[in-house]
Length: 579
Image (cartoon, rainbow, N blue to C red; front, side, top):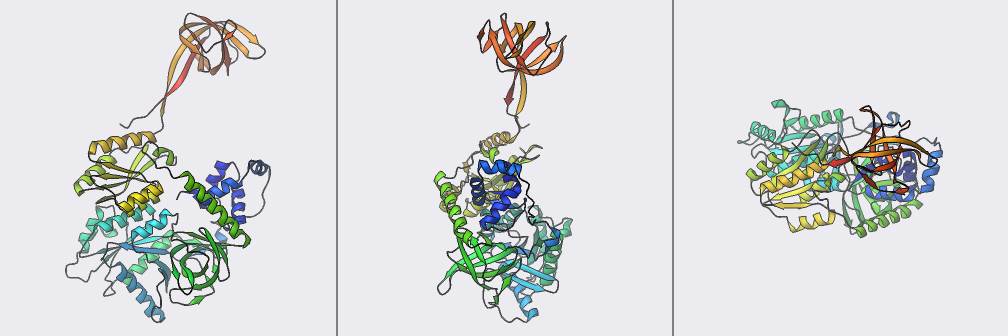
């Protein structure tokens, strides 16, 4: 789902950012700053609620109300990092998470873990860390595709005896697309055939250069089974978190993201929530997706009932009217009456979007979807039948990048196009190119539903040709001046309605009404203007050919003189080509 900053939306609507912030507070979304991002639904609600009259009123008003800023240093405190662990199947992700949890339990003497809520928080002498336990990178990206960017750090688990595998590569690319730092945990180092150095060298091929080999990526060798290196991994996470300078405001109304949800026979809809900002309390009214509710209970992963949950705290929440979806945003509201109003508006906007249908981004239309900047990016996912084809295609396409437009392959792999690939495309705004491969039925259905474009090829030069054409569409067009004709000024007339009229004789080409002109005197330019009227005798005409007299009404230039040359031209647009 597309997201937009408040100041960007304000600019589009022609109003001050504070107007939108005030509207959001009235909706019960909570306090925001001009740099806060809104999802597509809330942005559309705001756009429709601001009338033309309000826009005009807004221009004349001076708002003095203080709005709490996200970067107000006096209100921000350090928060715990939120960590997601990913990696290839059977490389020990779950075992590593269990080892970390066991380390915490032993030290805190809290007894055994009583329940699993999809996320948990550990407390150590150095601080706290929140872990999200997702099934894999697909779930991680699915949450991002819904507009939820909750992970601060990714721990990439790679088995020392197995090395980099296809799902390892997928996890790397999904993490890179999310633009979050990665810490590598080389697991199973206790095995006789473990070869950590080989793993580090394999990671280099995917632009993961660890510190030992001269890079910047932290790499820790661990054994989840033997509980070796766990302390070093936790230290690395604290170090990375310190560099990120993570902050939150515990005094504002809470907001967060749903990690998972289920229907409990005895308790009704139950969801695991990760509090991102503010403090969530029992009794708070809230809005989540298309439903509202009141917090009836907060339960941590130890099964302990809490009265409140601070930033970066995962909790199980009871009190939902309907079952939310993973990735849904959660906002505490100050006014219970606003819940039905906002939910109703959100449903109305969503139905309108469904009615319009989502339009796929074609290669010719992609440039319209990419934000302006010094370097424009063309995100693409490549799937092929064999490694050789994928590598050759990726290399050929990346050679098309220039200083003005960059082709960014966010993922390249072997095999059929999967739902995971489509999820990554949704989250990254990418297209998918399949070379000698097809797409899963589920992937096709998801792509159709979400408007992701799939392209299938059997000949490599056709891929390169199409992508090159699309990249050229991202370049700013080139304009060149095309001379239409010249006319000599022979007599100056004054018109009460049109100002100066140049009685002229067309000496070459033709003079066209509405065209731009350069006025030449003694071979030098003395000004630029335009033709606002053109007459032959007393009749208005569109153009006058050479060897004919005419009257030219000129705008933008004064003090015409006999003998001046009016040079008429227009600017012709042409597509700039990649070299």
